[in-house]
Every structure is written in C-alpha cells, then in structure tokens.
Image (cartoon, rainbow, N blue to C red; front, side, top):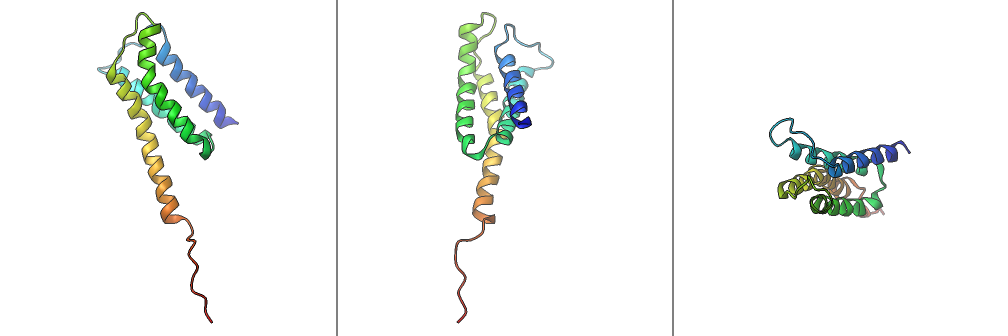
Amino acid sequence: MLRNILLSLCGAALLYGLFRQTPPPQLFDQSDKFGHLSGFAVVTCAGIWALSRKHIPQFIVGLIALACSAEFIQQWLLPHRHFSLYDMYANLAGIAIIFIPWLGWRVTRHFFLAPSNLQTSEKP
C-alpha cells in the first residue's frame, strides 16, 4: 500500500515537472536534462519496487512511451515549452540506468542462482 502511494506521488511529481506551464529555472548548465534523467529514474525505481513482477513489462513500455511522447505533447499543448531531442534522450536514459541493471540482476539470478531442475544420479 505504501509502495503504491510512493509510486503515485513520484508519478504525479514527474507529470507536474513535465507539463507545467513554464519551464523550470536553470539552476546550472543543463539542469533541465538532469531533472528529466532523475525524474524518470526515480519513477522507474519506484515502479519496480511497487509493482508485481508480472506488471513491470507493461509499466516500462508505458514509461518509455511517456518518455518519447512528452516532448511532443509539451510543444503541442504548452506555448512556452518546446521540443528537445536531448530531453527525450535524458528521459530514456533515466529509465535505462535503473531498468537495465535491474533486468541484468533478475536474469543473472534466474539462471545462476535458481535451483537446478536436473536430477542428481540416484545411488543403487
């Protein structure tokens, strides 16, 4: 329950940051790219933590769709925002830096740490 609330709060904060009327202020050079990367990384991490394993593929596909389409939607709906290919790359990188290591860990765990289905030879 708490995990789902945290995922909802992270998702709401990400959507607010992506679709607010005016762009966030530049705190340092390329700070908006850092915001995109960290926002999508946090939501990816929260989603992997909160959701059951069978729903993670759909979650990641939906998050990738949002990462790619958010820049188009910003330009289309918000007059003070513009399309940035580098922001889209930062969105996708935020997903990748969490999802790819997690996926590697899951695959490694499945193949190398799972109990073997091979039967040991029986003694007569």
